[in-house]
Structures are given as C-alpha cells and as structure tokens.
Image (cartoon, rainbow, N blue to C red; front, side, top):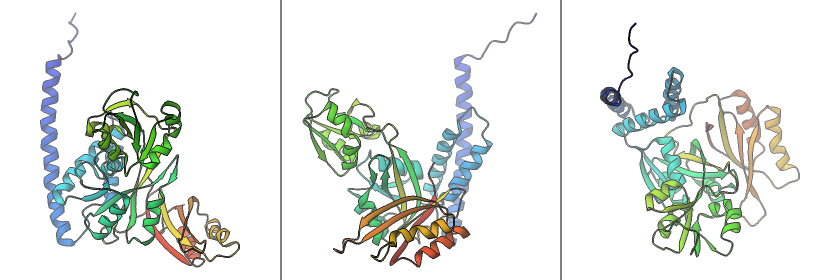
Length: 365
C-alpha cells in the first residue's frame, strides 16, 4: 500500500509564493510598459488620459473571468490599483479633495482613482471647486449628500455657477469614531468635527458626553489634527485619520445610523472629460428654477411622468434673490442619450426659467 502524500511544508509554500510574486511583478511591469505606449498615443491624439468608463470595462471583464478563490470585490480593488499605477506613468491625475489627509473625501478619491492619484488637499469645498475650475486640479471630489443628514448644501450652491460637471460618484460607508490622545473618555472638554459628523453622532454624544462642547471645524481630519496637540480634545473621524495623526480610537462607529453613507461627486471641466457614455445604470443631475406661479413646481414632474422617467432626488435651495425664489436640484434615473430621457428633458427645459444639466454618470454601487 502506498503511503499518503504529505502536504507541502510552510517553507515550501513560501517558496511557491515568492516565485509567483516574481512572475506577477514581471507581468505587471510588462503591462506598465504597454500603458506608457498608450500614454504616448493619447498625448499625440489629444485624448483624455483618464477614462472611468474604460476602467469600469476592464474591471468588469476581469471580474467575469474570475474563478476564485479571490472575491470579485477584492479583484476589482487590485485591478483598480494596477490601473492607477499604470495611469500615473502615462500622466499623473491631479485630484482636489477636502483635507487634510485622513478625510472621507480623500478615501472616496482613492476608491475612484486609486492610490497613485496626485491628491491636492483643500481646506473646504469652495477651494475644491475653484482648483478644479481653474485647472490646478484635473478632477475634484466633493460631498453631495448623507443618508442621515441629507444634502451638503454648500456643494449644491457651488454647482450653480461653476463650469464643472459631474462625471462620476462614490457611495462611501461612513463610520465615525471618537479619537483622542488618551484611550479614555475621561477628561474630554471639547469634541471637534465637521458639522455633518456632529449631527450624525448627536445621539451618542448626548448619551455619553452630554456636557461636552461640540466645536465645528472644516473637516473631520482637521479636527483629528487639532486634537493630536491637545490631550483634552477629541474628534470624530475615520480610521485613516486615527492612523495619520497617531490617535487612539476611544469608541468605534458611534454614528447614530449604522448604515450611514455619504455620496461624493467626481467633478471636472467638460474639456477635461466629456459626459460619460450610457451604462446599464445611470443618473442625470440637473438644477432648474421655475416662474413663481401656482402649480409651477407640480408642472416640473409632468414631463418625467409622461415619459416614464423616475426621479430619485428633489431638493430646493434659496435663490438668494430676496424674492422667495428657489432653485430645484433633481436627480433622475437614466442618461440623456436614451430617447425617453431626452424627450423628458426637452419638455422640462421648456417649462424652466433656469435649466442646467450638472452631469450624467454611472450610479455607484
């Protein structure tokens, strides 16, 4: 009778992994060399270097070919990083985000562009819009709305007169942690965070730190940066900020809603990247105003209903004219290249005193 075959030892398996790593490195570098040639062709033709639709196509194709044991989401993350590194050889993409390092905005940008993107840190969303509009950055990433607290009003206002448009979105699961120098709730005098984060954690703060001052700052990461220098301060921020500023996570995931998501928009000038082509699941965002007359807002909905277009968001913002006039921000399901969407938009435009398409882009999963 033959003896049962012994399994490989740990040393043998490590040798196999080392050999495979070398093969992977060689193949990735071969891919990078081809990407450099692609960059040269794009430069001669004047084509955009970053094509999110192409990134999505490559990742989808790879995931369809995946037979495990790696999960598709992990395969997607790996390939996004490979493509980001190769794109950096073609032409590094400058992306404006809310700073400092460690913000959720930074995390959203990395999820979309990969970690090889050249991030430009701004103190507020006004600076992100300005940097993108002026060409300092090719792209920008800004918060649009939160599942708990609703829209980021300043972003909506900035879209009104900015020349940029939306070419993509990132939906990020946001977990707020209480960070500070000391790993204790004792001795905290001030909690710092972005106003949205303070609002998203108000229930926990009222229960555990009811007498503590809540102080609004420009970003959660900025709050983390400030409390790193003061033992009596704490901040609300993500794990990236904790690692960035060497802080303890005193309490994990203290947001009032467990499923707390923030939607970020990827913006750029139309000459940097045109409207992405239609996919299987798109969103079209627009801002409109209507004459101040009875039934005018109701009339906005009729073209959508008549053409079978679903509205997924409807927000109003003051026009700041002193006349009690409003701008309405609308998201609809679909892409302007689709006939029923195009018909609805044409009919809608005829009813509006002001009409602007903010962008059409694939919906983030």
